[in-house]
Length: 165
Image (cartoon, rainbow, N blue to C red):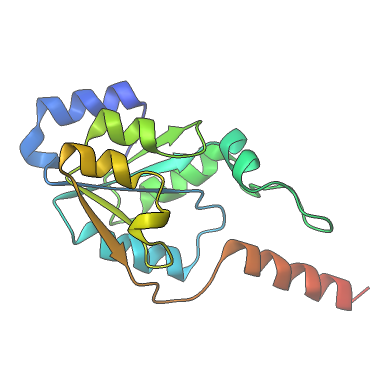
């Protein structure tokens, strides 16, 4: 599945809405893909006809996940590689990279029918929720099946490396 610019994706959806709608949209950093990501994306894809993933650019990730002492700067994997991996996953129909800290501008432009985030969020804590609600979109929160995080993976790797020094 391709990685799109916003303009390319808007054009693809406009040219063939039956292929895309109902459109499901989610977003995130997707730095080190793990089973939790895969199951989340599989569940998200079942909510509509197509799934588009908004991917935070490297600069965006650096703003929302600043480097912590003793940890490498994020993201670990560069944007182009993260986008390629996401686009290759079966549930994903398209990937679009964004520079902002939130996906509000993308959501405004695409107006997905369903906006999906993990169950670790609530509608009240989603900065994108008012935008989705304003045009009548639906918000679905998907329960996290595999409690894992890239931060936890990095910490385990660093702990293992430290214990062998």
